[in-house]
Length: 183
Image 1 (cartoon, helix red, strand yellow):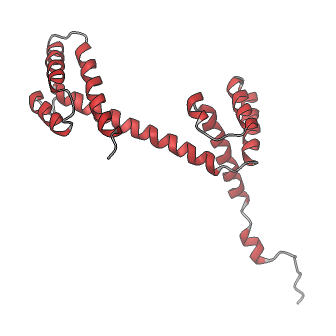
Image 2 (cartoon, helix red, strand yellow; image 1 turned 90 degrees about the vertical axis):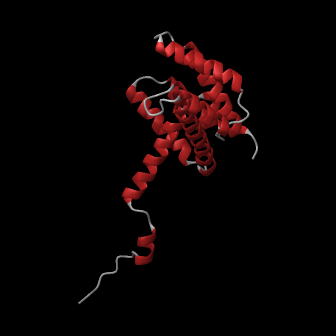
Image 3 (tube, helix red, strand yellow; image 1 turned 90 degrees about the horizontal axis):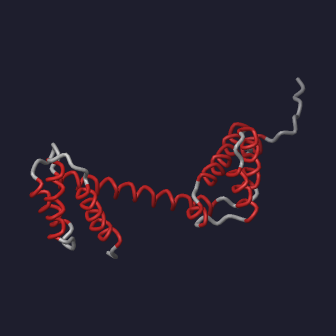
């Protein structure tokens, strides 16, 4: 029995990425390009990008037709494959973390506002104000009491929520003060 030698070394064959893996990598770079194009100008300025990639992103954002947009996204992905993506991905992760923190803070502020206005889960707004002031002692007590009283009155009379908006801003400022203060 004669064994043909194919010239393929089993060790090298296992180290090469599969075609499926190569395709997943190419799609990941394309998705990265799409994510970069969706960023606003201020956020994109925080990402370390070479000039040719910035030009490709700007051209992609100017392109409106679907076929041309797809080609331009491919061109952007080609530019991205030629550079080191680690600093770009790190900057994008930093942007994502800031967005997540902002969303969590917004949800916390909404929960406090609802408690202060007396929702169905917490019908006692005075106790909610006491709890809030215990947690955020730097907040202006008098202003919060006045805004809470006016907002509850507006809610009872079905008036536009002007005081509730001001209460929301005051609560947001108090929560952000704690979040931004050095520990």
